[in-house]
Length: 201
Image 1 (cartoon, rainbow, N blue to C red):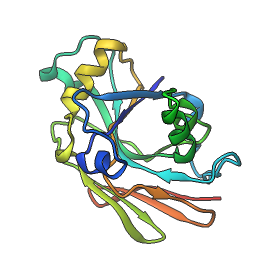
Image 2: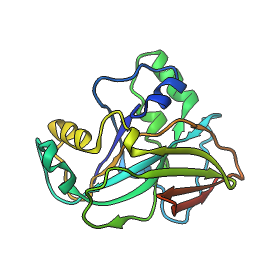
Image 3: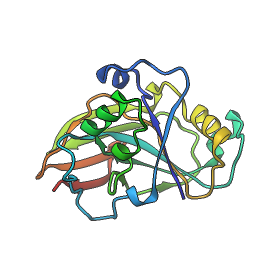
């Protein structure tokens, strides 16, 4: 199982971090050790002073695919949910300034929070994702505002990586990213339904 992430997939998020809007999907990966185990709190790593939350729409791949045609792409999804891509922004900024890869700032232990999966056959591509921090909405976006659609993401990624059963794709975060501190409580919703909640330590 691998975790593939799409960066800068909302125009407003690209702008809020001072990045250019990409012309092709920005792709990076997280190791499976990044997955935060259910019911565990997220522990801020001691080497970062600026960890940001990023709520995202997640898809899970249900069958093997390579060079997937866009018109068949949605048939490769077997479940959806929301997740949080925790980012050590201070480390990421430092790495970007040196033109180095982001992996340490994005793939550290516990940096991938995955909500409860909803299984089924999916044709809808219009989903609302919401993140609450301490009961206040801080991120709110819709998949219809993606720069790159689900079909485009799956087709693009499958050109480079064979997609296998159980692979997870994080599809990008809307604007509103920001820091978390010990004591915060986060709640992630998909179409108004809470699918994840966790505490920050």
